[in-house]
Length: 297
Image 1 (cartoon, rainbow, N blue to C red):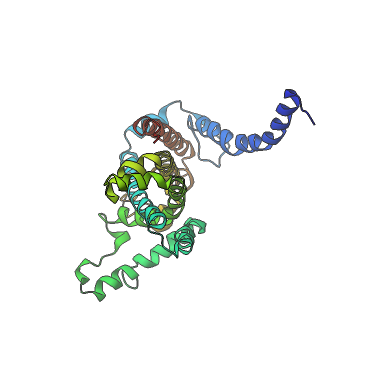
Image 2: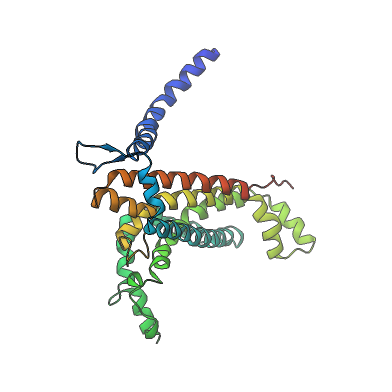
């Protein structure tokens, strides 16, 4: 049956319309609503809304907690990107190049944390970090390093790195599988030719593997940055609630505090707009920095 262009477009519109409607309801409308409420002084529950223009935004300029939250967010992103990418790339290469028989089993093991709720992961790692019965301090005491034991989530210096580790642990599997897909598509003849030319395995990795899976690496980095800036709040809220002090305060947790605990919904909405802007700017900068010409051999 031959279809006209009009029929094809109508069919595509029919298929895409439900998704587009859901996108508008759950993404576009909240974004516009957040921007609108950011210009008001509103508790979030009262019927009284006072228009204050850009006062919420100027208030952020003098809010020291906002600056600390932004710094914490980008430190969290930095640790997470490097931790996940290094480990995911290492395991992806190991499971594809070393011909490990149990590779399918390890794929399941590494991917398992991705199907767990972030709340469950946070609670699990709270027990691991527990200063009295936790696994970390227990191992340190067992090997004679008791002086290294500490309340990890209650230490101003170690709290943020401690929260970052569960995020890295939970993210390795997904990006490992993504990189493995790219590696398995590389022709083996390239490695054979490089080996004949005398290239070491390290040289093959940097000259063949990394350039040819660069699109997957770039996608992974951008995805980690976006999800970290927008989603780190849940893990932080479960594990530390932004403490001790503001040592692990991120923009998302501060937004929650202001909007739903202090009932400053307008100010919370302004923080939400800030998160959106910083996320967009970060992605644009990454797109420029990670831009690389397509490699063909």
